[in-house]
Length: 114
Length: 116
Image 1 (tube, helix red, strand yellow):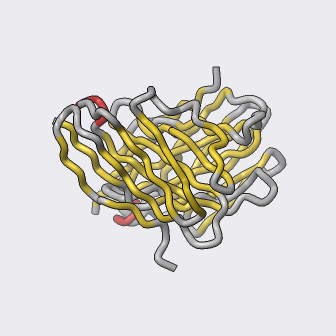
Image 2: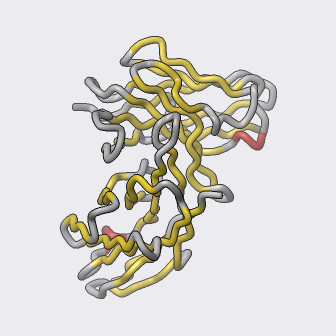
């Protein structure tokens, strides 16, 4: 069964500090992995998309890594800002006869405190 | 571009009533997705369309749920009859799928549905 597990469920960090979110998956056959940021009351916004051959991808202060061998991904936030307070969702896509099949992680809720 | 537009933003209805959620995708996008999000279950894909044709509806909970896409600029998600457990935020997203792989999805603001 395809699954995506994220950790931690939530974390609190001080403004200016770095943090790393984890995503482990058992999705096959793997197509791509995405990280989304979701602010409270809003729809998710894509941060990064990585395919099998990509190890790292950055979007400003957000850097995602992918280890397709161990089926792990991380999202690193550098020099956190108050606006980084949000839920971060890992989504893994599998190839399927009916197109890509998406499996969603439960998300990590990040709170950045001044 | 106005982005993905959803209406209504909030809907409160009584159990047993019909509910219709609406979505206007980004102009030029060829794929549209309906999602449901709850605290308990997180984000779930309900159904997605490609070129107005339903491709995968395996996430649709049951026969009370139906979705249509009569043209490239409009889609509806209907729940009939609604039940309290349908209370959730329903998101619509659209994308331009070319190679079937790494496409960006753009989400709408969501419709918060409360069924009492």
